[in-house]
Length: 231
Image 1 (tube, rainbow, N blue to C red):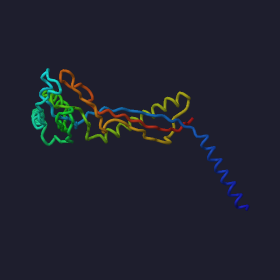
Image 2 (image 1 turned 90 degrees about the vertical axis):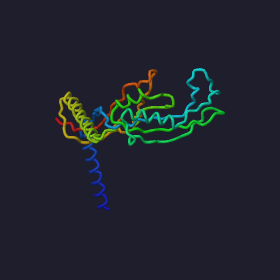
Image 3 (image 1 turned 60 degrees about the vertical axis):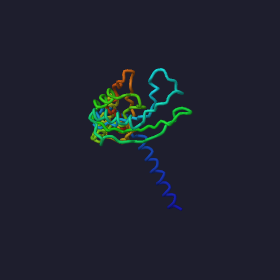
Image 4 (image 1 turned 180 degrees about the horizontal axis):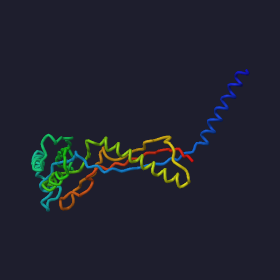
């Protein structure tokens, strides 16, 4: 019985000491952030083509009068010619999917096809858009942007976020007449952007030219850091 009481007393003393140590611990916890803008070296450009009726563009026919369907093979042939003129090799063109779309009650199916085109330069997109006949093109947009050195950029971004946290904690603590001590804890918060696909559209305006922008990979980094406060 005495042994049990002694053990219980020791446990209470240890718990009290631990609580007191936690209470007396002085620290500051801050969030440091950084942002990197990375030039991609691989661009996935998505183009979806779809069959259409010539009467759609004559300016006078009604939908129920559409009869002359332009086959998908003809549209694809023109697309591949445009891609070749823009310097895109056949190896860089990958077919993603083929589907049928119902046009209107009483009319035929319209077949569509989607291409994932790997490019190295945004200038190629400009060339493609300028040469492209928009009839038969259902959508054109940038899919994923990549950079082969992304791991190195991620490391740099996290380090810069840590430095930002240290700088912030330093001037806050010094404003109170204290000094910044050792690092107690580092938590990597949700870093966003980049590799994921961005899905930023390069849409066509009325003149058939792409809207400029979304030509870099923007990544944001955030680190939660706890520092000891010393006298």
